Amino acid sequence: MGATLHDVARAAGVSIKTVSNVIHDHPHVRADTRDRVRAAIAELAYRPNLSARGLRSGRTGVIGLAVPALRESYFAELADHIIRLADARGIGVVIEQTNGERDAELLAISGGRRRFTDGLLLSPVSLGQADAEVLGIDYPLVLLGDRIFGGPTDHVAIHNTAAARAGVEHLLSLGRRNIAILGGSDDTPGQPSSASLRLAGYREAIAAAGIAENPALIRPLETWTRACGSQAAHALVAEGVIFDAVFALNDTIALGALRALAREGIAVPDDVAVLGFDNIDEARYSVPSLSSVDVGKEQIAETALELLLERIAEKGPRQSPRTVQPAFRVVARESTGFPGDT
Image 1: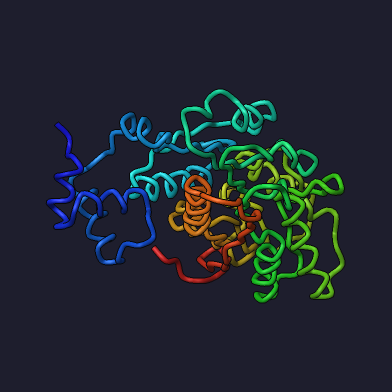
Image 2: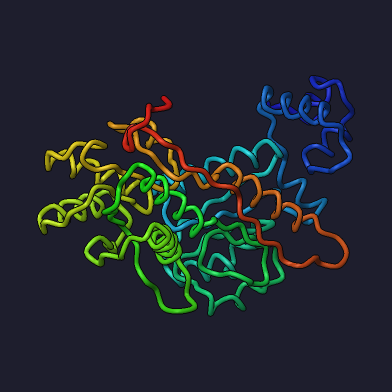
């Protein structure tokens, strides 16, 4: 048989009520006590009886997480962080992959699966600013990403424009002046996306440096994959475009570009510096190791989960929607001429 609530209480040297308070994330528990209980939960691999809990409280002890694609390293790592943090609180996570399809994103918000979960973390791709009203549902929901701003839900977003500008400024500080951007594109006015917001940061940086925009250096991509990154880098070389740096709008694109540049006999970073975005774990282990803009995945995961759990436990009048944007930083590695951090 698995560990019981009594076993956890005995191992932590506290009452069953205290264990319950920690599991339900009640605020009035001392930090050292909370840590001791969580350590006992982890050591004993305790799992709450969700069925019994649901009958008593009307809650399932499970939340949903809907992301576009788990094959994308950023979303896989984000999901891993959320699952670990939720598990430490005795919360289960059900993951839905929407493939960025509008119908799947709408189904995640309003479909029948909602009755099996207490709330939802949603990262939309196809839903946009015009769809903000569909988020106004009587169900705990926290939005992730950059498609809808100022909506009726809590929102954890990335400082896309400022972070991209900081990344390009890093390349400019190295003396690079012909910076190709892979993945940037202009979108329909009023419909922001990661591609357009990061392109805006690129433009701000080169304009501030007094560099005229060169359309040949801006490469929209059909998908943000290694294959598309590789193809774009090969195309830059084949077309004879002069470039001394590549700013890829995610690390997956950058890894594809690194491979293509190596095949073209172009030395990184001596001939071309390469910078990615997201700082996925793989960036530390590529050859050369990949410099990247770290957008704070861990903080995004923690903040989104805390906001959702607060909404689930909310009593009294509902407070106004909150928007949080975690801090970012540029992590310089070998692909821009700095030692790796492995």
